[in-house]
Length: 265
Length: 303
Image (tube, rainbow over all chains, first blue to last red; front, side):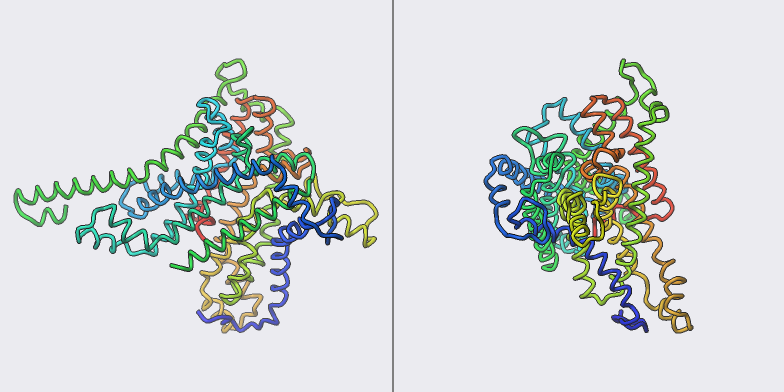
């Protein structure tokens, strides 16, 4: 397709660019404002800040509670990525083979956590965990977050598999490679970028998850998002601006990594 | 089977059996690959929801009854919650269409490079924590927040405007969170619209406005519909933003569920709320899939 192939000049489109630009500003401005305010020296909400300091970062890293919550979140997110990635990759492989009946049902089940209201999953998980003693445990959090992250891994790896020619694996197997060595030596190296992207999405999904964590985490396993949520219910503490900035930077880093890996294909 | 039947006699039978066994083994292998994921989904989503559904059928005395559902029609506070929820969902969906359509249209018309740069403005918020964005809007909109202090400093207003901790705050915060869910599928579908159709229209003398109205807009409707449905459905069950920005005055469906179960420990009532919410969600998505034959989860599979 030719670019700008319609006989309409950019000048005639100025109003559209202006409108789109304003919406883009609406989308990005809150994050930018928070990043700038996190360096403010005052506890008043002023924008732009009159004086600059790192006091809110000191208050974040200096607080045992915030640090513990961050460590819990990192642990859970890493374990979620470690569990969800192989499970999601295996499921995507099976779906991609496309020979199973009930593919529609399987897809619906695997992507259910994207569609079912997360509050219902939160309450249900809490209710289930109360019976089997998994509330306020790292294991419980990892299981709950794995279910949330699974669809993203499946969809990401599936899109990688769709652009891969499965005949290559068949060739390897007809030449005597076993099922597993054919996958690990032929297929996986070629879809590894999708798998890594899927793992990064699983990590960020777990790290940013709020609602289920509100129900099933607490005490020593309070996640960062749960602590932030409770802090926001009480008052607006500028320390949260510093934490938010760290979360925004984390999102940018992980997204860029996922994009880079996506390019590498 | 077709290979087996091509070989006459007993040998064909043996081959066919071997092939069947092979296909069965293959299917079992694939099922084995799926089973851990499916098991987790089943254990953590399906079982608890089924359990909650079962709970919702009993009243507080443990008798089988429909009282958990009947109260939705009898108690004014529940009716108010539903009205608020749908009001917020309609307003947020409407605002997302008004803001999202021009943005998606612009993205679809820009050259590839420029579009992928502008797309960052949609994707970055999409992957930024909902909490972070809600906090940002609290900072911007609250009584002593940025907008109010700017407007007061400029002398535009004397008293701070009530922008947060009310309906307005919830709608602004939620629109910001829902916008990418509308823009991404809409943009993807707009990109597939054949430019030749538009050029043909213009060659035949249609003005740019008429080309847009009569060709582009109708072709973009399926993408718009899929964005609208996903945004509306997500709004119905949304928790974080109304809980933090509603100031306790805007009680939406999900908050009601949290209050009923956590605060009042009334699991039957909370479960009934959840069951109805799930039924409405699935009904809307089912209707959408039936009308348009598209999957609503498409928004997550493209970046």
